Length: 209
Ligand code: S3P
Picture (cartoon, rainbow, N blue to C red):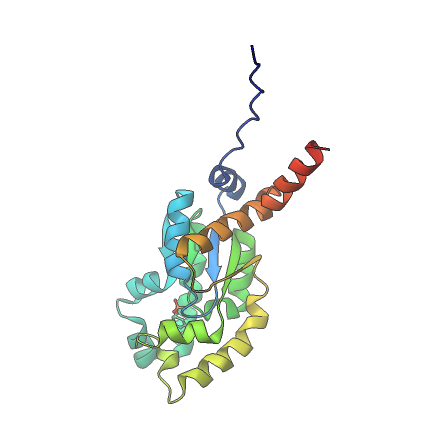
């Protein structure tokens, strides 16, 4: 009679490990307009059974008007102050997955708050991907210029050195959204629990030696 080999214990799903390690901290997505922060954030939140919050939507609700109107009526500095206040408030309400507007991480005070209250992921997209995604829409006041390509190139060169300060970086490109979400989950697990795929792979290798 053949004996059944003992089953290896099933490892806990990464979502459960991540949620436990996060505690009250949130996951904050940063990066340029068109990087997919809201799209990926919504899916990531569903996977982790966390609420999804979009800072731009919350700013609009707090101001009672759309972002282009805030820029037009009150100017960018006023928008930035409101944005910093709203993000500070949202960070107190964790855990959640929070998608932030592309300029918010440029403010030192906001970066410090995010560091203290969240794990940040930079969704890094190149100029071509960004342009393809934002071209058809007119709801980004910063891109209502004669030369949107030039504006995106300038913003990227100013912002990328700052976005680099996020805890994790995931490349946002034109692949199925679920693939990017999976990469976020793997990076979060590895960052928070030190047990990503690379670690598991080396465990398997050393166990078989
Ligand atoms: C901005 C990005 C926008 C919005 C505002 C300014 C920016 O958000 O906050 O138009 O400075 O990059 P998204 O990044 O969600 O498009």
